[in-house]
Image (cartoon, rainbow, N blue to C red; front, side):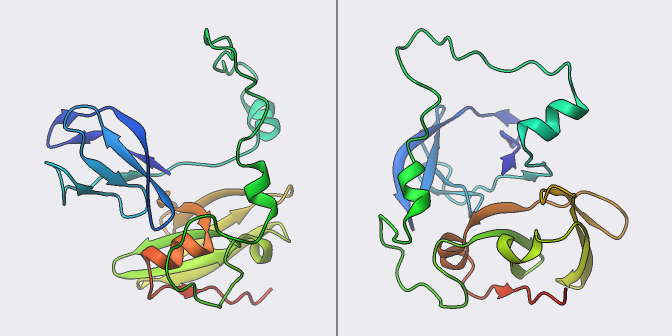
Length: 195
């Protein structure tokens, strides 16, 4: 997820607080040390509590796909001045087990707790699209959320290459575990594939 860091004409800078809310990382801003929920897109504690972040449309993709389309892309160096192996994913073990490390309350049984979903909210309606169901075939999934037609583009490699409305405007969306999505959006519906 990508957010604008400007709130009321002030540019904030953010860091990872190391704290969790409903098993989801809280950010903090360096200026006021307020805590910000990624999934709620707002400050939950501190001087900015209640202020909202503006989510920006973005794409999630693989390096192979991106570099093929943008071969001149520059990437961050792993030479950071710290002796750290950046090729090791600290969460690798977490991805493989079905259990959740930190409690989130009751988890709805619609999907396995750690099913990865594409989450979309429009107006007051939230919908989860299980990645295991929707990325099996290339093409376009059309659906209606919050009274608005949406299109999810799946490329031949099984990647979601775009989420837009019927005017081809990119729509904000999140990739998240089911347990977190349903904890923050308890009234969410789950997409029922007709494919």
